Length: 197
Image 1 (cartoon, rainbow, N blue to C red):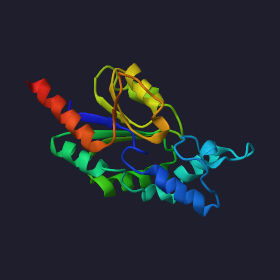
Image 2 (image 1 turned 90 degrees about the vertical axis):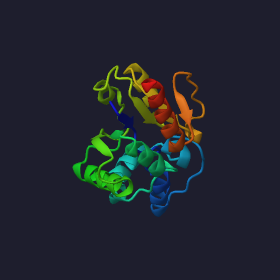
Image 3 (image 1 turned 180 degrees about the vertical axis):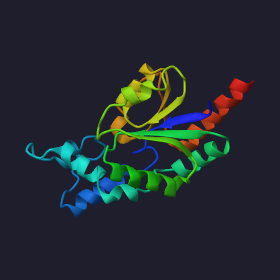
Image 4 (image 1 turned 120 degrees about the horizontal axis):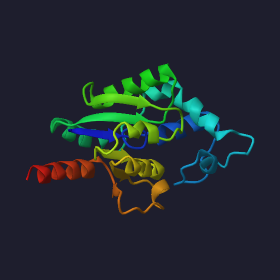
């Protein structure tokens, strides 16, 4: 099966860049770099629910205009031209209008045909159940969140972790760490050649 499973934010699209611009527009200043949690990054007061802030952003019109993350366009294009299709699994929101905007954004940035399936879970929802549909297929699973790489391992997938400052603490020999999609494309295409040989 020439299919690749992939997360979206911090993998295909630059969620973090857009989120920080949005936060600036709301009067917040980022204090700490390289941390995953919004509460820590902005040193938010305890009475501010950081989950609500992320949920508000994830259901905003910004979801239609995120930029491509690093070299994702080139890597995805190379794999698509080699016959691969993508199932995108993201924990963005279950809001139907936000989902439409996200799908529009992906089609605009990567083309209308690269994606077989788009699955949007609730904000910050774990991915174990979504990945269980692909159990023991050995498909590649591209993520930036270590916990979701672990979920991929439990489902019998082959996780690839996109390197970020916030995930440098994670060290698992069963997970391949890459800097971007050019490495992913090389890895997948080389693996394909080895399978044929």
